[in-house]
Length: 356
Image 1 (tube, rainbow, N blue to C red):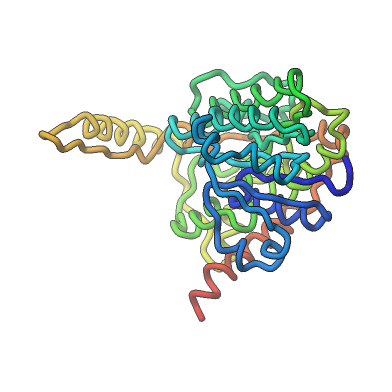
Image 2 (cartoon, rainbow, N blue to C red):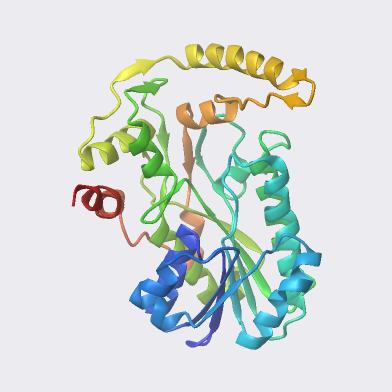
């Protein structure tokens, strides 16, 4: 690809999107952002304020919204050549929201891209979860079949999303590639470390020995750009991207907690007990959710689910050998470096400011 390709980051206000935006800028690319929200960072952080001149606020939810927002008009205006699609709800968002964004929104984006001649590459941020069914996966590669439908709504929508994107290269003027990161973490992540730090868990579930692959955000960004550089050879393909260093799930969380001065989880709770408790809680939530007193409906969320429990206790290991061979991927930051960068950000953003 040309050195000055013009890139549009869909979901650039999200934490992974922001990493991609900043890394593209560092490589001398022209960058625009499309997102439903715009954070203060784009007006206050110098690298973003000085280099992202085109920030388009809008929704990708459906065609009707697109006709109002005009995302294809923005693409024409900016003469976009590479689209990075990072937008996605939380893995535990309601099923209708996941479908609206991951499936309907992606279809709308692809439709818009077909109408813009300058678009040459479409990069999807998919998920390693597309092959995960709540059971141990060890060193699985891209030959593994998709998970069976029905494990959870997030997995179902990410599978359908990836299929749609990878089929697109056969009927459009642009090429596509899917990047499958595993358990993303890094600076500006509002989920993993902030939530763990907020709850400061004293117990861990299962044996505590289950290993998982995590992926630091800047390593994902790096892989995306390598895929674009090699797009002619990898058009229509998917790649697992990890830090290539599986670690104990609970050990990793414990290391992050100790980095910021908190105690690591030390009380072991067997998964079977959590599962039984989860069934009991689910039953009571189901009963309460079906109760109705006149116009009053009690909607009580289920706090424990089988997919969350599986995430805490199973092995989730994915091979990125294909990415190493085909696009020359190698993590820019190892697990310790990435963890330190993340926890330093957290301390500066949430702890040091609070203590001042």
